[in-house]
Image (cartoon, rainbow, N blue to C red; front, side, top):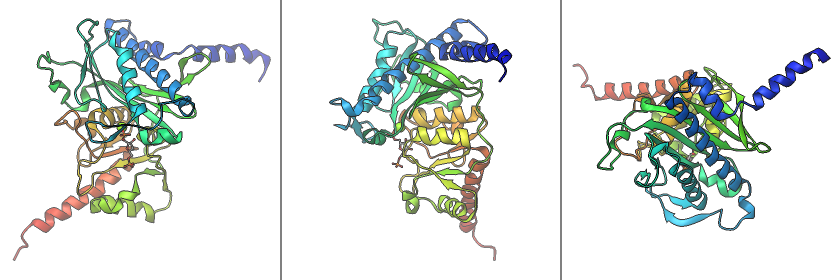
Length: 355
Ligand code: AHM
Ligand code: MG
């Protein structure tokens, strides 16, 4: 590079270093309206929660009382980890006094948390999974946080949060944080998908990739094949297809955020299908599947529950689960084609044969 190019390169690098998350949100919205300021402030608070969680995770093996189980079970009947509780409370404490949200609903709380009356109350609801893939925490592998923002609709005077039981197209922002070798925050406010890396020396999330597009097809299939014999025949047939064709490679980390992060950049499909005994699968619609579906659709990908787009699924309850097939659009459609084929066969078998 010639000397003449140097000032440009430096300026470019400096500009990039200055593109913080809150500035980026305002740039995306081309506005300083009250709503744009609120969204920017909300993302800033999520970033603060992520920094607190990342800090604790990075020293978890050196501190007392960070790793392992609490001994309790959550609303889903799953054993709760100490990090789940910590991260859930981190989100509450960064939002409680913010004046930005009126309620918060999380995978770890049976009912939504309502901002107390002595604190400023905002018009948004934060839905979140504070630590996703928490079985990875104790072995120092990647985990994530997932979040979505919805506007409160109606008064919610009875405190049932029934307006949250709407489809995922009601989300106005969604994203995740992946706590890996570096901490990355990926978000969308409906204007594409953008990734930020936490620069520990600045304590700021700095723009790393803008307008990320997931390839239409990719080599990765990501699924817990240990469940093979519990699945419907259609999913087994898809996996058999993948085994018999060249160009596929399996990757499964046991933590959704990391698995989807890989697919976002490299293409492919992540599946958590239902089983014959548990057709609704494992993943929660409001805290996991819908936020990630919003993000992948914004990146040009797809997310399906099998026969319906995830963003069209209306939850019956706050903690409702759905099967999830998400990633590159061609790969998601391929999985769906096996599901359609099975349902066609079942319908044909039910028809009385013509005499
Ligand atoms: P969690 O939110 O309780 O951690 O559960 C969700 C996690 C996902 O991150 C991951 O894809 C899946 O559960 C792994 O489940 P399994 O161990 O059944 O493959
Ligand atoms: Mg989870």
